[in-house]
Image 1 (cartoon, protein in one colour):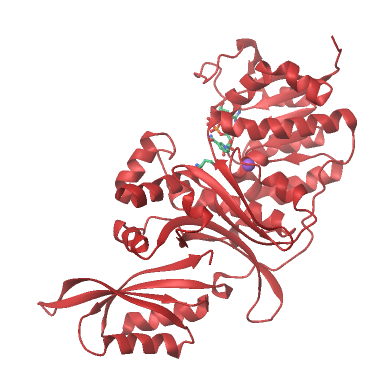
Image 2 (cartoon, rainbow, N blue to C red):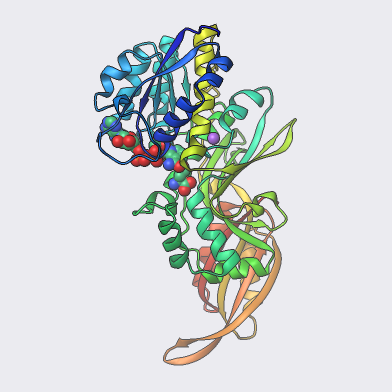
Length: 442
Ligand SMILES: NC(=O)c1ccc[n+]([C@@H]2O[C@H](COP(=O)([O-])OP(=O)(O)OC[C@H]3O[C@@H](n4cnc5c(N)ncnc54)[C@H](O)[C@@H]3O)[C@@H](O)[C@H]2O)c1
Ligand SMILES: N[C@@H](CCO)C(=O)O
Ligand code: NA
């Protein structure tokens, strides 16, 4: 029997993720020891309430409500409590006491990441966070290490399971948004208050982390453009389907040229977008996640799998734990931080993409010409026009026949498209602007 020295591991949080981290760590102790070259000793699990039910049968004596004492004696601290405070203070305490830290906390990283990374850099500690983006899917390490020698041009990610579940159910089964959300809540994907998921706060946090890593710069959460999926109706999904597209909530991070200055910048944004049914991201069903990366030399890569769940997220945490523990045994600098590119984050008005504009128009002569003229006037080139369903709308008490027009554009600058849409809304011929969706992944 080989005698290993101990690496002391403190676990902060014993909930959905924490209980599974503890279970797997205890169950596979021998395997971890041989992989790391040292025993990983779980010294305790800090929780808020000692008597809460757990998803795994864990030794009672491991639990404590005294997180600070647990941190003091640890070589590695795993933070799976969630929230900003006291998680932030505990991580700073761990770093300053010489421990490496593993966290799943995307909200904390997107809000206080710079402070935490600087603190870690000052004392030579490491901060690992594979579980914070797309759960089980390895994407942080590929960006930090495997692609460190390449130049990432663009990332398109489905990074929120709840919204993908809802949009997929609307697309595949024709469910309404409300019904799909109710099932997502029942299955435990969406929280009782689904705001973080549905209004894309969660996806924006992940976009900020991904874009910062991919472009070696700092992308503050406030500069991530964010639109949620509440406005996506069954009709929008149906029209998209007819046109060969699917609606997905996408986190898009890309390098682009500032149209105002000609300088290089980056964009990070989250919104529901149309994607061709031929694109690999269109095949991401249910609550799965996927991250599609386009790099200069590597070309297109796709990372796919479970973005959440106790054991799934624990897998990512434990991978980070093994890396941290190996560094502890062998030494070395670990992963280098590289956020010094200082690229400006450009506003949404600076992006260039394709669009589908859906209008309800009055069905009378000359309508098409007046609509087409607005696109031309603003320098937006039209690729296709489709006339859809007919209906009627009350105008001055009289029923007037209407038709749905879908106008697909070639790549256009967002500011030009926005000006076109404002002008279209003012036209007598236009009853209403039904939707404006960006088309990604040409
Ligand atoms: N659940 C998932 O599928 C998933 C996926 C990816 C990332 N994450 C992230 O993992 C983290 C944990 O998520 P979870 O779903 O396990 O949460 P959870 O609510 O199930 O568990 C939180 C645990 O932390 C403990 N805790 C909270 N505040 C504490 C405090 N002040 N002092 C001591 N203990 C405290 C609670 O007692 C509980 O044991 C979050 O940052 C979350 O964003 C979760
Ligand atoms: N609420 C998140 C959990 C994983 O971060 C989701 O639906 O993807
Ligand atoms: Na991950």
